[in-house]
Length: 158
Image (tube, rainbow, N blue to C red):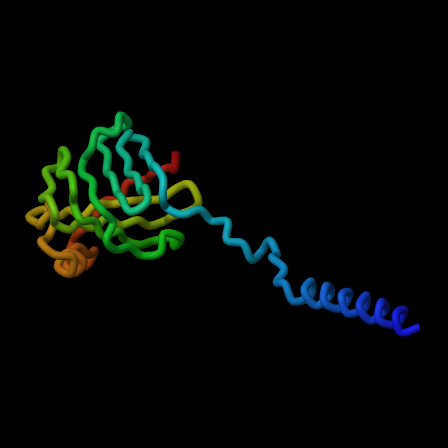
């Protein structure tokens, strides 16, 4: 009789353990999953120019052949999943725009929706358009309030 009771106790304790594990595991519901893609990847405008974010690298292109405008390492950025934001880049290739190597430059985006975004590079007449010598100065200077980012281009994710 003792052997029979110990088998029942073992069976019920295993059943309770399995039930406890099943109940305590969080269930993932579809509405909890954020399916909005990130800004990374290659983006192109109707004019053929584009930009690309690959890991910690940023590339700005003159055309659909991907002739390089400039490129660099991303050193700061806002959340890529929000509808507007910025990317601070340390220039590693001056490209066709003649950016100053190792200087800092900022691009901005707005109206980001899944596969479409508007993007702008820091530019203003008479401005310091080829980069700033340090990150803090770049993030302070390159703002809409200071007259940069007047023109945004529309881009589609490729």
